[in-house]
Amino acid sequence: MIDLSLLPKKEKNILLRERLYQFIAIALVIFLIGLSIVSLELSWAKQLLKNNFPSYDLSFNKNKEIVEKIRNINRKLQAIDKIQSNYLEISPILVAFSKIYSDNLQIKLFTIDQNKKEFQIKGWSKNRETLLNFKNELKNILLFKKTEAPLSNLLKRENIDFEFIGKIN
Image (cartoon, rainbow, N blue to C red; front, side, top):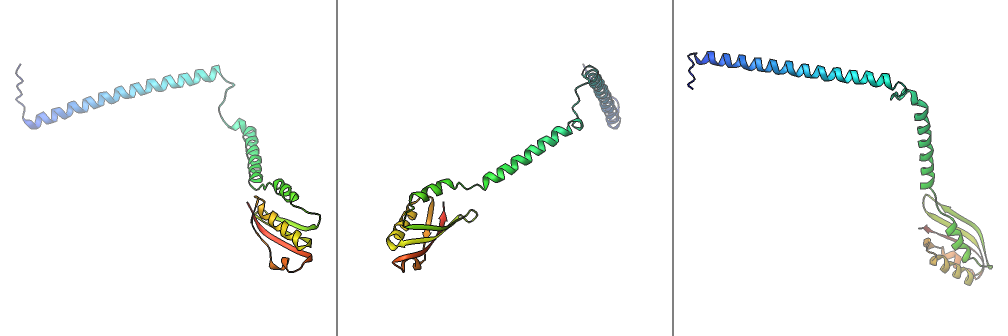
C-alpha cells in the first residue's frame, strides 16, 4: 500500500499535534474515570467498615489515659536506669576489707567517693609491723588499685595514726 499525502509539511505537523493532544486528552479522561472509580470504592469500603464495626475507633484521643500511663512507666524506668548506672557494689569491698583487718588495728574512717572512684582509710595501728602488713594486704586486694600512704605513717614505731588513699577498680 502506498501512502500518498499531498499536504504541506507544516499542515502535517499541525495534524500530528492535534492527534497527540487528542490522545493525551483521552488518556487523561480514562485516568480520571479510573481514579474516581477507585475513590468511590474506597469511600464505600470505609462506610461499610464504619457501619459494621462502630466500636473500633483508631483515634488516640480516646486513649489519653493509656498514653499517660505509658509515660509514667517510662519515667519510672528512666529513674531506675539512672539509679542502676550510679550503683557502686560496696559489699565485695567490705568483705575484702574485713579479711585483712587485725586486732592491733582500728579503722576510724573509711570513705568511698563514688564519682572519683577513690577511697580513704584513716585509723590507728598498735605497731609498725601491723601497719606494714595492712598496707601490703591493701595492695593485694584486686578491688583497690594505686594505694598510697604518706611517709608520716612509718615515722613512729608504736601508736601510729595512719592514712591510706587510693583508687577503686
